[in-house]
Image (cartoon, rainbow, N blue to C red; front, side, top):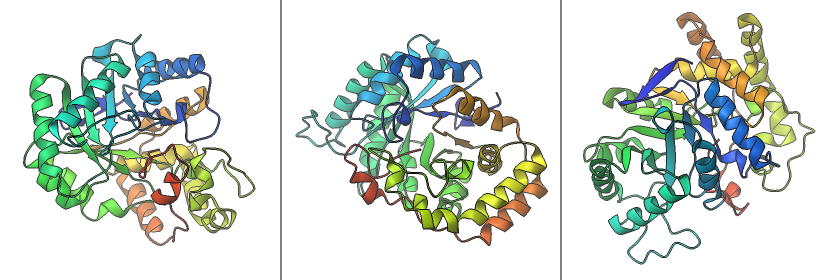
Length: 333
């Protein structure tokens, strides 16, 4: 597996989004099988594993803690995220983003993750006006060895500048794929300029870009795709030109549509790493294999130019997703 650096933290070129092992994409594998899959990803070279206290209200962190405890700690990078407001069971009269609130949050996460430090600790949803305060606390946690680095999720360029001036940011985590490219205007260029890594969640449009779903598919329960309008039958049909384009390149490169989608994200810069969710051995092998699919400069430019001409129908409205009750406003993967 090729590697990249998120500022000064070395990671596998493709990481694993772990949220789906406990909720958000329909029935998940049994815990024993899920742990085996995490280990399989590690055997294939994946070293970056992403979770959050909000996912299943702490249960996902507990799962990741169990899955990683049998792996060498210095060989894995744990990416965790703290929610800006108290979650069920979190009594924080000082406020979640106060120093006391953040300290209570990380102590709980460290216990659930069965580790004494977190590699990258990210503010899961941005609260305007708190950037400098949070950055200051992150600096203290870095000095104390509780975290190696920190990040923000889906921030604006202005929020990045404010926080980075206090404590250098390790990585920004935001949605980025052929279907969601709004960060290309200012955030991605800023990350490149400041030496900040960029972790792309939902790099395959919640799986849509794999081309393995049909307008007749039905999503039930807490599966977020039942409220993501990209997956409405009419929008899936309207977005077919995008899939056709991806399939043409996949045929040319002798790979899958999912691999082309990930290879395109990777080609955007060596500071970018995608973290697809993957819950089967075949998908793990396929997705991690995308690190070996290289688009030439000409192929990337031509593909990107073609993407510029394709209109994307539907989106992943965070407010609608939040109505499911167990998923945060900017749910990842």
